[in-house]
Length: 278
Image 1: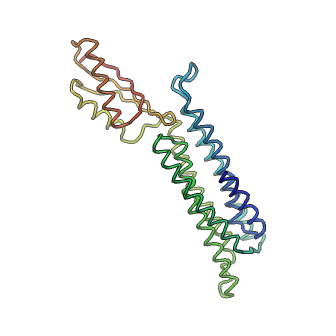
Image 2: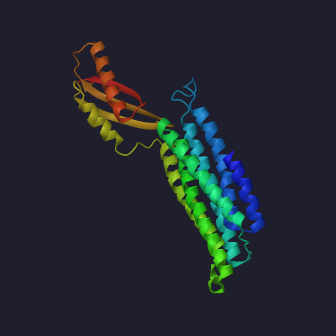
Image 3: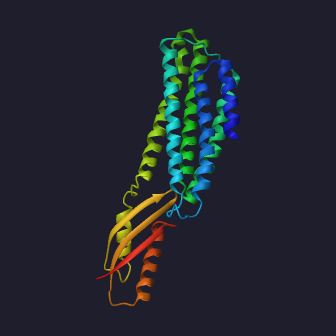
């Protein structure tokens, strides 16, 4: 609902004033709407339990959602840069800065602060990469809106002070600033998404788990530790060397202790322990 309202508000004000910075933000808000809808469906689908065709669950849907959101941001960035360059060098457009120009951007910042905080808090609570990606997206929206406001102020200053006429192009420059922030978002989201889709292990997590497991009484060695994320769930597989003379019940109790130790490092992880006789 916030994205729908902001997109309509920014589009109307951007068209009436001719501000590329505001129109760029309108396009950004339209993508926010698409991203929010994708995230909603991704979180709902990823929360489904494993079935006969998806034995590890549906968590990868969150990663695909984040990847699609990244591609949308890239498309937006290309359009903003193209339009900004066209205005700077080929087709000059006069920007009419009004009180509505500032009102729409201030409104955008207030809403972005609110929803980024809610998303960030919920993402940490449920370890959701899709919600974390949205939270990061809206946090950078705050900075991009601030850049647009600075561009509008410069345009207004050029109107009031003839000596500052060179600032009349600040709106297009602000749009380029927005695009730079969008690129930064794409790089961060893209790297995280690709890492998740390629089953890249969290940095340092393997050694932390191996060290903690080897400290469990009864474990002589921990090896072949494998980690992979599927949405919010971390899957952990490992082999341990234990006393081969103990009963099956004792070995099972030991694996339970190992799982509890791993859960202290990675809560809610799906752990599989393979005991081997030393």
